[in-house]
Image (cartoon, rainbow, N blue to C red; front, side, top):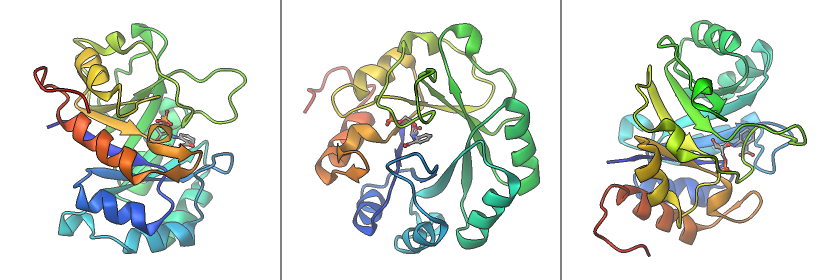
Length: 218
Ligand SMILES: O=C(O)c1ccccc1N[C@@H]1O[C@H](COP(=O)(O)O)[C@@H](O)[C@H]1O
């Protein structure tokens, strides 16, 4: 079954919904320029509000953009994140992985197949649309890219597809990209930073039907 990550969680109701729907990962955004930003204490309350991963709840992922060790440390003191999603160079992402002793997924913007990562030392990759010069942040922009770029990709480690996914396009995205997992933020919101329970339910249902070509889109 296709893995599902819902990113940019800011309220306990959405945490509870994700746990009920057996979403695999939830993401907390520690990026000040994002409408989904949370502070460490808020993330801690959200973390504690739903069943833990050991209790079959979703794994908690923290997103960091060009963060220094001190800011990551400060968050980890308050919230025992399971995975770090890092927007930075390949070397810095590997450094964070060894320094903090937990899995790191490096986010990679892909404009051509030559951009696909090759390093098997990285725990995982989030494959998404490339950043553009005018962007105020590297993700959460609802922008898609050419999903066929990952077809037949012998990925060096685990990966997931992100960028502009919605309940309407997620099945096509899975079929075209052959992604084992998908990640969504703005596509399940009623306005920037506000998650919609209805859109999350549809997204999860459609993602899990991702490889079933015979059933109808709803
Ligand atoms: O969600 C954000 O605001 C964000 C900020 C900074 C870096 C990444 C961010 N989100 C991640 O971007 C991708 C795609 O998001 P979208 O579905 O296109 O809105 C995804 O990994 C989000 O988790």
